[in-house]
Length: 303
Ligand SMILES: [Zn+2]
Image 1 (spheres, helix red, strand yellow):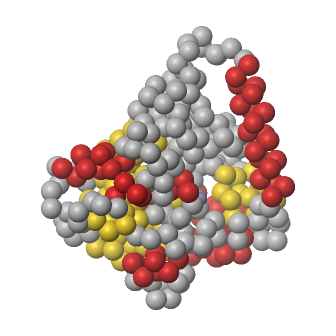
Image 2 (tube, helix red, strand yellow):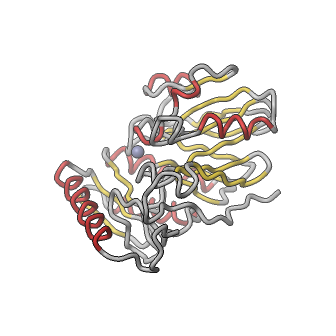
Image 3 (cartoon, rainbow, N blue to C red):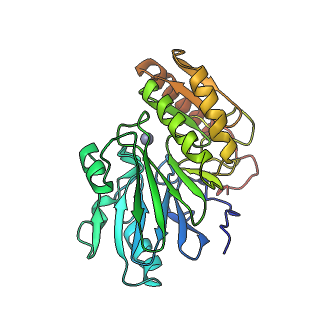
């Protein structure tokens, strides 16, 4: 079964009420691969989570931006998906340890045959077996499905990327996606993108699949931070060439602190407090504006 990314993602509703769209959307990519999206009606982050199933183990990469089970049924959803593939050990790991990627972890703490990888750098290095972080590439064998894992710090010190030869997907978390790439440690980010791009050149990467969508379908235009309704999103996936473009751009932006907008994504070189406050204010103005204006298509529920 060829990987299927033909999907319309949930993207929030004008009402903003949890339950007016699924709390978690499940998209089946192939028999043993799923992408889940959390509803914008429960968190504006609306992250994407990945479930990869092998012959012996399954990997859940990220657990969502909100924790309570009534808003984030991640455990029940994963249990249901794995019911068709019994006998697998479950590994719960993270692209990185920011709060919008780990909030559902606690739901797995008492699950049998389950490992929840810790959030600290040492725990990540130890679980995956890194001995020369961030330079070595390690493997995680799910049984007949050998993933490759790279360290790509810069956005966050624990950030990893996962390459899945079965789908050709390179899972890039918050480091590469159609949105605002916050390179908090810019030199580290630049080196990570460079290593990731070199890695991808030697692999059969079909798509870059990140953790959020923040751009609109208008090149260079993003939904402001905190937007809870995004009816005009581009696809989640980026073509592999986007990584090579990001590599060139990030090298060229060395030392150029600030916001740099490109058609498919935006790079924030060393965003400080002032820059983040500006983004938050822009988001707040957008939300006030969208509340006071009448719904564009006259429907109350939007999507
Ligand atoms: Zn993050």
